[in-house]
Image (cartoon, rainbow over all chains, first blue to last red; front, side, top):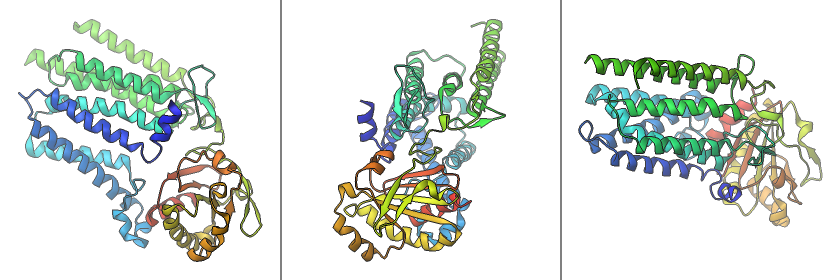
Length: 242
Length: 180
């Protein structure tokens, strides 16, 4: 079944899974929306500008980082090749676009993040499926019976582990009652996802290693988890005093 | 949850997290587990030995120390046809800097008689290798044509591009990275 899945969604078709997750996530976010704080139009605008920022920023910064290559072939700037892209730069551009939108329109920050949480949670479900299709984010070799044959070894199906935990997180957030203060849903999602990353990264075979073998993604996940706990405390304190 | 139990729970989770980070250290110290040859970014490129259209035998492992672009193609594949002229331009620009291009024709699923006319029509000067048995397709787990593998001087695959045609800018950026 996995072989068939990987054939159907082989690169570059694996990106269809991300687009599907984006579409579904936006639909869920609209359904889950608390219209007291943010309208459907405002939500759609935020997502639209976010996607635009990601695409333009990711391509533009890639071009700037490889100017000599594009000088010889300037029309390549408009190429449909998805490999001419810097994902990190795209994410930074989204954050900048979000900041600018926030300064101009002044939406309530925490309510907006809560409104976007179903979208983030659904993307978190779609991404591991995309990784499974492309064979990226693969696991350590293992002798466990549920290992998958990938890149000439029987490996932990880390993409499937990720998919299951992300689906669980989405379900948990979807069916639980929303608690005050505003921001609780987003912080819960962040903390749960950071926890999952912290645990599952141990089974990855492609981790970036630092300081003689520590996994960078685990260190970052721990920091994000600590920040989520601290932020939750601050929001609760503000609610109690305010 | 009340304040103190909540804070204790958070502190315990963070402490367990730290313990797990140290328990799950990658003791081999390698970013890509096992260093097993595989046709994927970060792995050693699987070795192969094939004959060219001029009768020469080329083995990938003999080219260690050089930057290699391996391109899998067939005469019936339109994106392959489109990008091979671009690859020729890149090859001429970077050959003196140490770039080797190996264009491997999937002969087992192509018409061998069409290969030489195709090379002449396209004006290609880089080696054209013939995969007559499918061993290359098997070793590189071919899923789609065109497929390109950018291999650095240490023999590691730095980038895999499935599908085409590749833009010239993409080729230049990837080639410049493997030439470093």
